[in-house]
Length: 447
Image (cartoon, rainbow, N blue to C red):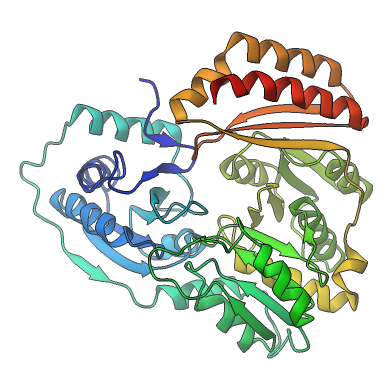
């Protein structure tokens, strides 16, 4: 069947609009209970700070317990915390209720395996088929129970800080933390303070409706300004569920994610703390990243877009650092997925150890000329129509042929939003801009 509900990172949409309704969540809970929770008959649920989170949590709980599953409520917790501790919870799966970096009106449900990984398309397709067919045989199911795990955050912090081996390793650091009014609003500032940092916090007053609003990784302008005004060493912004990070230097200038990936790999390698000899990123990363990584004597691998693809490749080749240009950075030795706080701690430690200013370190390498355009359309069905359009495919193919061997052309439909991303990179800036414009103009017909 055609995949309509599950995107690259679970199900996402506007709260109280299908599929982000209580009715759908009940059915998803029943489907998960019958299809996935067959062994331990236990599932855990975490959520972010959105006002609709409790509604969806209650609905998922109803569906799961109807299918005979014991539900463990984790409360408000970062996505990387849920993925990290799931293997320790004795559950068949976890569910994270979040729309990540999206505005509060949206919400989503991420499905996490017992090992803390994302489910395969095969499993989500089966769940979707059950929901669409409304096929649930609950006869004979003894209703499950509900409990709370209030120690989940403690277990996560033990894992997230496992590389800290001093009492106050961040002493002398002055940092601005923008918590996006999300899951890290209390956790991250306290961790940095406990480790000795001087902390200025913004975006840490969640009210259910202000998550990601004019703050966080999607709107870091206030963080940039605060860093400049406070004379901080750096600024760090996460998104609503804590799995991505945006960083700026002491001048309030953004540092690209590719630069952070390279810095972490270089620093950990020099310290003898790097597993393997490779770095993984996606086709949307700047092409100069590969040359820099190879100049360090390390291998570089490029994957299709999506954190799951990066993680799969990292495990295949065996390496410590990988990520996406969007801010998902995976430190595989300390977590299962992208983790804004872990990345922030590793970066801060590396900065202090260098004895330099951020602006003296970054950029580590010059970027190749590139143009990256996000084109928003009405809905994800329009996205599918646009990327399959003959004229669009023709102009993309022509651009790929012209850039073959000297650059890269990527047309990527978002798996979570009605967006089409056009990315063109190469050695000649004029050619890059001309090719990007030719593709963008064809897609604009669908706006």
